[in-house]
Length: 82
Image (cartoon, rainbow, N blue to C red; front, side, top):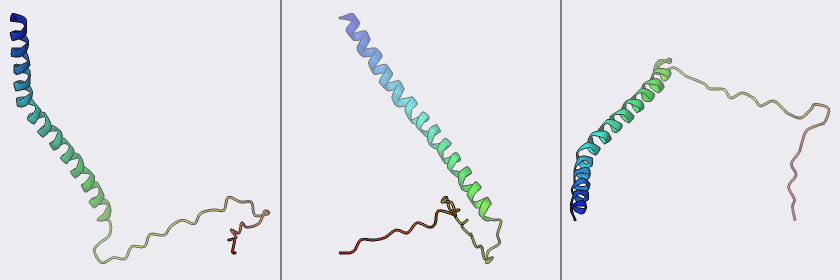
């Protein structure tokens, strides 16, 4: 019977300790995530500040090179009609 009371006492003590420590760990983890998000945001805003407000910025997509050899011809996708 003494072992049961010891077990219950230790269990209650662990839950009480967890209730005191868990919020601190959670707050630390959330602050860490917020700092990481702020760094990512600063990196993005610093990259976009290369251009002044009102400047025109044109992003040109690179043309895809054809994989097919020029002697083979061009592939044409036909649609079936009924």
